[in-house]
Every structure is written in C-alpha cells, then in structure tokens.
Amino acid sequence: MTKQINGLKNDFKLCPMCGSKKIENHGNRKWICPDCGFDLYCNVATAAGIVIYDKYNNVLFEVRAKEPRKGYLAVPGGFVDFGESVEEAVIRECREEIGVTVEGAQFLCSAPNVYEYKNIEYKTCDIFFTAALPPQFDTIEDYIKSLKAEESEVQSFASYKISSLEDIEKLPLAFESSRITLQRWLSMSKQQ
Image 1 (tube, rainbow, N blue to C red):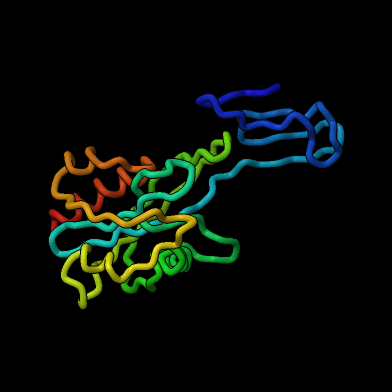
Image 2: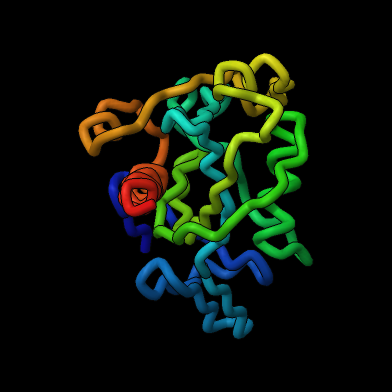
C-alpha cells in the first residue's frame, strides 16, 4: 500500500523490524506491522534559523549549495540535533555555516515547513530568531566579507534589502517558512 503525497513516496514496503510485507500506513503519520507489533511515528522535525539584519533593512542570505532547493536563498540555520535546544542549534548552525558566533539572538516566530529530500517529504516546525548586525559592521555587505561559508552547505552569501512585502515576494527563497518569517520580521521592524 504505497501512498503518494505531492508525488513523494512516504512509505515502507517491508517492516524494518521483521521484514513482513503487511506493514500498514496510517495517514503517512504512523506505520504498524501486524506481524511483530512494530510502530513507527513520523513526527515533525525541528529546525532553527536566524534573520541577521543591518540598520538599512538589509538581510543576510545564504545561497544553498545542496539539495533540496540548491541555488535558492535561505537564512542561516538547520536542523536541531539530539540533546540540543533550539537556541543552541541556531548558534551552532551559524558557527558551521557562516563561520561566526552570533550573539544577541531574539526569538521571532515559528512556521511550518516541508523539507523534501531524496523523494521523502519531511514536515518541520522551523523556529526563527533575529540578530542585529554586530556593531563593528555598518552593512550586511561589510559583514559578508568576514564570513566563511561551509562549502558543503553554502555556495555564497547575498544581501537583500527588505522594505516591503513585494521585496520578499521577489526573492527566490528555498522554503516557505522563510517567506512567512521575513513577513513577520518586516511587520515587527516597521512597528519599531
């Protein structure tokens, strides 16, 4: 019983424990093997990202170096590791992907997302933070010169000015959760 969601196969043909062909898919959220009693839940994964911005409303983006969405824009971030808080994850991801330790991260929002990888659809809850540009830099462009990309993850860096919803819509963003987050950031920045 193979079900497809948006063309992606999220299913098993055999029980990973006993090899039975009777494994049952329950709404792509749970698999049960009636032969050995194996249960597997497909729970939401957690990811963390950060909007780093300057006083001119320029935002730091990474150009993704790998699939999914290679060549598209994303804010620095990634999946939360076992035994790690979301706050720790966003700091670690920045160290790994952009080569710096970000300080002063403040919670912004969370947004649901779909992460398609190797023909499997992963549902995620992406939690986003913000951080103002460190005071020794005037613009995101200046900041980019100090960054060291993790080549397996980041092709290059880019700076885009975000002053309107139209600015966000024009961006080739890798993930819908980033679009939602940038809209929230823009709304909050206009209130300040």
